[in-house]
Image 1 (cartoon, rainbow, N blue to C red):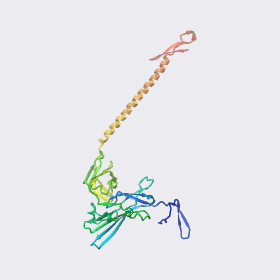
Image 2: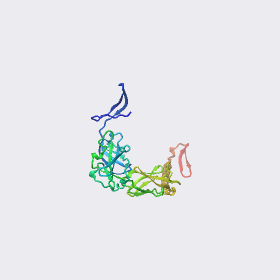
Image 3: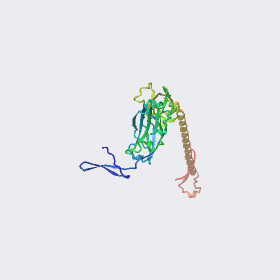
Image 4: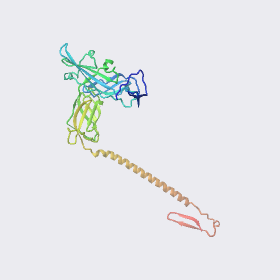
Length: 360
């Protein structure tokens, strides 16, 4: 059952959700509902994106966590001019996937979204690299006109925030917002890349206009079933770090053979089948320095233990000698009158000491 909540004049918490049937009986669902403040849009950044969509955008505002599934909409109005008085317009609208809240955010003032793909006529794609349009006549966030002036595209970006209709066209809320859309960048991939896991170097992918309309967060580079983590981005190169251990092959990889893995690059929703990557065999000599250090540390520990053992043994021998010296200093009285007649003094000999004692 899907229902729409009625409007209220104030926020309320801990409202019981009940089902009232036609016969008047009430079923308690054991669920609670909370009315929160209406979401308010304040800004959207960045403002340069790809026509094919998938690039990340941050929407700022208040009470954005009041919305169950916030989404960004992208609407393109294409107008074809036949003469000064005759024209035909068509409208295409696309919704993005549900936006996400940033992790560990207490006061939700931002949500992360990915723009949907936008479809434009081929004649306009040539003009997008250096669009020339009169911003005063721009009804949406962007406008493009073909070189012959016969095709015009007006782009509108909106927010779907549950029942809030005020932000379905953000240019009507803030006319200063302008967004540029660019075609996908050009990516150059060699046929084969050899990766040495012993050196743990980065893998570089070259191209043109890599930063135009995208950021490092928009790159998703896959090597087999694992990720090649993007580390740096310039307009002509993106570097990523492959996993040290060779990952498993993707089940649908039919382009690379002979033990190589397919490298795939995703920039937003733009997909590139890039190169085949060969992992060079791991060399155990890379472990020798670490092993040598470990053996040296172990040797030092053994020497210290031996020294401590010898010092302890010497200490025990000194204590024993001290006790024996105390016995050596024992003196038997020389006054024979103090000894009974049936007692005599004898000497007990061993190899090292002479003991005197009184025995009967």
